[in-house]
Length: 332
Ligand code: NDP
Ligand code: MG
Ligand code: MG
Image (tube, rainbow, N blue to C red):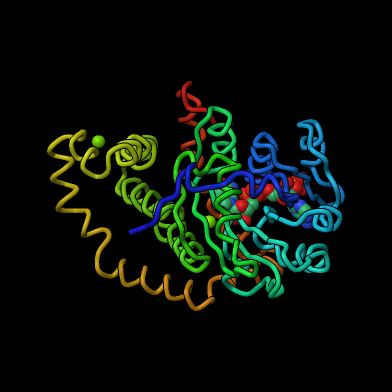
């Protein structure tokens, strides 16, 4: 079972005694930087020329430098730019500004796990990854609560990497909720698997296949949309609150019976065999290497897939129907 750490296990003064650079000011970057600052930590932001988020960071009272300047000043460098460009930003602006005893931090393990970034032996390599989007991380912190974080140390050059990572997690409110110790390998592989097999890939394919089955059988797309997409949120909310048990308690007995007899026919042994293949390609680096190659080639297939789904009847039907529901906020 996982080891859990709370406020009392973490010493905030460790991170308060360091100079932190947060590289990037997007979803995670703004949340980490503002909350660390409010926790009494010395923070500067590193951003590229022409960054859209620079003005916002300055308005919020933070000092914005170039990535190289921020990395040179700091002794804890948290990299929160998009994963596919982290290796380039590291090579160009961070690598030459690392000194022995510095620490390099990540919010996701991909670049370390697959060796796209290879930090020198003298620096600590740590991860603090909140299990939620940045805006929730910041809001929870401001409300005196926190989002659970997972924390890992890949390279413990100083022998104090874990205490430093826990201290950082405390600075963004993570230890108020609870911190789980993991490894870069476990975090990266499970994160990629979860988003591909279940959360994004699996769910999108399931919704589309269900919708298409009904429409191809002659049912109205609007009705198919409600049954296969709209109601999914109600079901997921119940599962989130109380597991499968609460969902099954809340739906009708007919729905529960259908769940037992038909669910395993949809997600069956073949599906699970394919999941194992997908996990294998994550573990052996095939997925990560293909994705970085696709990114560096200018995203040709990514853009093709995106365009194909934008024109799908599920999406055009949804656009029309969501306008009828005043409580559904497209912008949120
Ligand atoms: P975002 O896309 O929200 O933000 C990226 C930030 O990086 C922006 O401020 C952007 O600036 C800046 N940026 C882009 N290019 C450069 C560059 N060359 N040099 C410096 N800064 C640059 O990223 P996320 O917050 O989503 O992701 C950051 C990390 O956090 C990733 O490792 C991700 O896996 C991880 N993570 C993300 C979660 C999430 O909920 N989003 C959850 C947990 C982990 P601008 O836009 O102004 O050009
Ligand atoms: Mg992910
Ligand atoms: Mg129904």
